[in-house]
Length: 178
View 1 (spheres, rainbow, N blue to C red):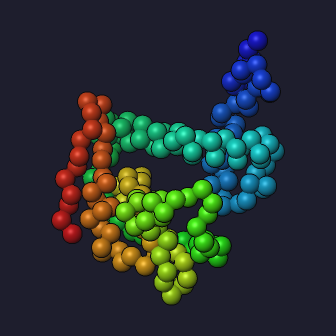
View 2 (view 1 turned 135 degrees about the vertical axis):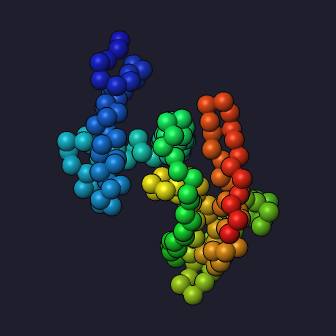
């Protein structure tokens, strides 16, 4: 039995409309307010949070951003004048703890791409986010390093990740000179 509002698989309740929930998610991201402060007109805050988290984990947000890039590029609206900047995010003090259960020694080695994203610096444990954006501020690359990594050493890694997908296939944009 189907529903006119959102997806319904016969289990639980039918999904609340995507437009309403996306508006709630965008309002929360725009204002920086906690999830509990999302107004009721956007639906239950748990729905907004769960949908945001689910879509983040399954790559939906990344696919939406990629489709926006492809559409803008096909319309000739992407200017390849890029800017790179970075910021630091402090880690919670529990991030310094011992290896968690279920992880093996191979998962915590320096060769693992997921390890080494926490660095110890004057401010404690930090992560550095390097962002490459085009002229209008549309993000093209996000690169994470430890907080103790100097910006100029991460430059080539950030630029090497730059890929612009075009309708005909993937095209690598050559790295600019610093």
